[in-house]
Length: 555
Image (cartoon, rainbow, N blue to C red; front, top):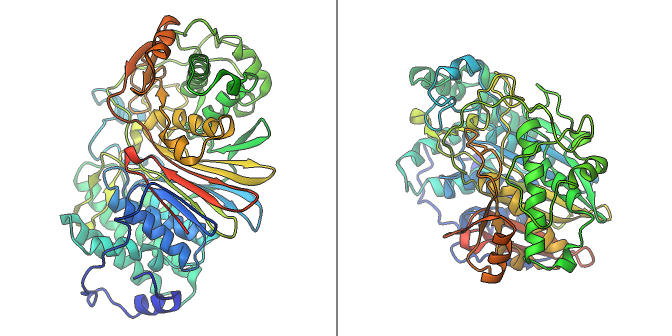
């Protein structure tokens, strides 16, 4: 199905109506995709094999990285439907080679107008883990269409066709409903008469300001949800500059402080003076210093990070070398920390004297999401992290709404306290790494609070230890819960260190002797996808962790 040209595909889509699409559902290629690949023209890694196949086919038909990412992300809402959804969210980081610019599409919705702290204070445990009240405004649809509009070359109908091919197999009862909703968006797009960019806006308007929005609003109101038509109609997808730091000749880009990503940058600042390569990969000193640095950065994340449109986050101080130098003094190479230690970047002090008040902890756990990284033959690169878990199906629309408001809290005075129109401080955290002004690494990972812990290890596996993507995503990993959980702010497990079972007894004993509270993971955690670009040859080497059923393809 992916072998005919774009012109034929467009003709097919435009000649098809909602009532006439009765052809036998198509089986997307991808069942035989592996978890690692290499190619000079383009590469994709993500979750479901059919989603990766959709992205690769888009590249092969002449689409660019933004086109392929949109096609992949839309398909992931079906192949990875327990991890992301059409009514979910997705931060998308894009390197535009023509403009030589890195930009961030914040495909994240805000809290509805009815989502006040007063409302959730009445709830036992604050913001509920499940149900319809914790749904933020859907951001994924507008995020992907914004990527197509700003950077892409194809229509919504073309980007969504692989998703429709999966839905038309009707493997789940809701697939038929979502297919109808999507085809309504395609019909709206057709009204543009061939004007691609106007058609994209008409498609997105049908979702956020047209009949679909009114149906979502009516269903939410009838079923105890907080989203209303005015929330959907006023939704805006922000395009922002990412934040970055230099690490040993490399520039590392992450999302802003409405996201946990900057704490990875803080950790790199803390680690910069240590000779990790000499310490050795996954050796006791290396694991110890990395985990202790993460503890300090995570403590700052929990105290300061929030939507910067609502609170003043001292990001320049947090990412400064001067602050890292002050904080680094708290790392004891012989002893694991057993305390949360937020610092004071405003006054350049290692410890904050009066941290913000916290409320009673909830009972949330790390949640899974999915991943997406893409690179094309023109030098464009995309890293995205789609999500939308524990969602509720909104009636006959086939649209499942995520539960992202659980990443806020209801603690009055805390920077991340929920407010109408405020973005929750999410864990979704794609990233790019540049060398000499050109993209070198694109990475994304699932796994809630372990996402950037895994991202840190991926980056260092490549930059410090010279690993290939395949080796980097399969190397044994470690993680800590020495932080507030990002879902209902669960209490910190101070001193904790979770290890893959491949670590030797000698390593485990050494770390335990330093005071780390060791536990051995019985299954994989975090689910990374990684592209590393050979800057001399242009070859894209790509891999996704096979234990997590990540897939990869290239050509």
